[in-house]
Length: 263
Image 1 (cartoon, rainbow, N blue to C red):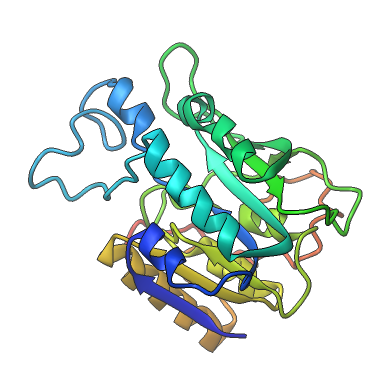
Image 2: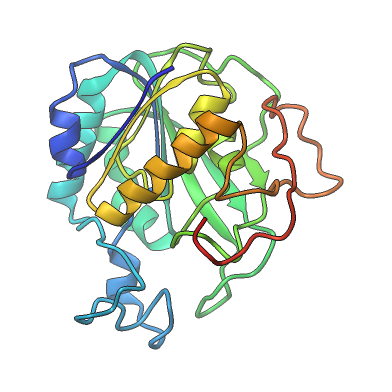
């Protein structure tokens, strides 16, 4: 299994990959749309977070339709025939950009990630995010028991902004990869997708425009490869009593309450 994580813009990164070289794309773009249109204050996640000197956030993907089409076109090119795509959306970006996915892929379903605990929000507090599942060609999922609502606790407190549970990406891969496949995440962020790929015996390609993200994810992956433990998520995000027979990756061991300090 090989891992490559680089500091690069997503479109430039994808454009350098050979055509048909990736089996699955599983990614969580840092959309700008919702935060540009819905300002709730000056908190950690929303509000005037892009002001000079604010180090609490990260550079976003400018998700105008033309840029998003360029991104999707490159995804289509690098994905092999029969490949699968999982792209995460918030409620705003799904309405503004989700339909564009149909121009490049066959959209098969919209999956709901139930984060179990309430987050922030205005006109109803947010407890879910959405994942568009699409294919290039007709290859079906390898399992027929996977639901379209996934309940995994959000990571709180996170070690990296918008850190997603490893189980969330493992669920994306559950019916789409076999050992030896190549998984790509052009918005690697905290590196949860890379850990999920390694757990399933896959190689991984990823990039990010944040040097901090690349450093964080690279150190996280190196620690996991050296020890078999994930220093950024020591506890499982699974919900007690929930049936996860379809998620055949082993559960993460719980090594205590996560800390907000860097590992």
